[in-house]
Amino acid sequence: MAELFYDDDADLSIIAQRKVAVIGYGSQGHAHALNLRDSGADVRVGLRAGSASVAKAEDEGLRVLSVADAVKEADVVVILAPDQVQRHVYRDEIAPNLQPGAALVFGHGFNIRFGYIQPEAGHDVLMVAPKGPGHIVRREYVDGRGVPVIVAVEQDASGDAWGLALSYAKAIGGLRAGGIKTTFTEETETDLFGEQAVLCGGASQLVQYGFETLTEAGYQPEVAYFEVLHELKLIVDLMVEGGIAKQRWSVSDTAEYGDYVSGPRVIDPHVKENMKAVLADIQNGSFAERFIADQDAGAPEFTALRTKGEAHPIETTGRELRKMFSWIKPADSDYTEGSA
Ligand code: NAD
Ligand code: MG
Ligand code: MG
Ligand code: MG
Ligand code: MG
Image (cartoon, rainbow, N blue to C red; front, side):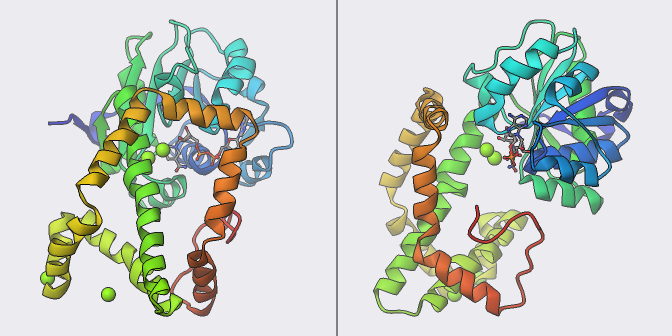
């Protein structure tokens, strides 16, 4: 059974006594910085000069410094720049300015697991990884709740890295929901697998194939959109509340029977073999290598795939439909349709 942590297991005063530098102010960075600040920590944000995030952080009343200056002031440095740039920022701006004994906090284990960042022995290295998007991490905190977190310590130089990790997890609201003890290796490999095979990659491809199958058979794209994309959220909400069993309980017997007889025809055992191959590429580092090589070359493959995805007919249909209906109100003002 996994080891679980809640608010009572953590001491907020540990993080409240530290000077925290949050590097990056994107999805996770803004949520961590604001939640830490509202929990009583002394927070500054480190950003590149000219970054579009500077104004956003200053509008929230946060002090914004260069990465180097933020790191010089801090005894806790939180690395929430994109995974593919973290090693450059670490080598050029963090490591040369890192105070002796300062702790390093990550939101995902990628750079430690694959060896792109190798901190010196004197630093605590820990991870507090919310299991949800940053905008939800902030929204839940403001509403008095939290997004569950998984917590790991890679290097315990101070002897109390766990105390700091749990204090940090509590400060961002994660222990209101609950924390699970993990390792950098487990978090990195399962996070990459989950997003590739099921949550992002698997679900996106499943929805696109469903949409293509219906529209190629002559059904209206708007109706297909509802059946294979819009309703997915309602089904997933039921799964989160009560597992696949609750989803099956809530749908009609017709839908439940169809689930049993047709689900395994669509997602057949070959899909599981494909999943194992995807997991192997994560574990042996070849996915990380391919991602970083493409990013270092200016992301040609990434950009081409993003453009191709945005051009899929389900996106055009969805954009038009969502304009016509009032029930979808985007809560995140920094996302613009078609600009992912
Ligand atoms: P993001 O792309 O939303 O934001 C990155 C931020 O870093 C931006 O403010 C950007 O301006 C800044 N930045 C970029 N280059 C920089 C540089 N050279 N120096 C300083 N700042 C720089 O990133 P994100 O999605 O929040 O991801 C951050 C980390 O959190 C990653 O490790 C990611 O895996 C992890 N994570 C993200 C989510 C999520 O919800 N997006 C969920 C769990 C974990
Ligand atoms: Mg994840
Ligand atoms: Mg991830
Ligand atoms: Mg239906
Ligand atoms: Mg039923």
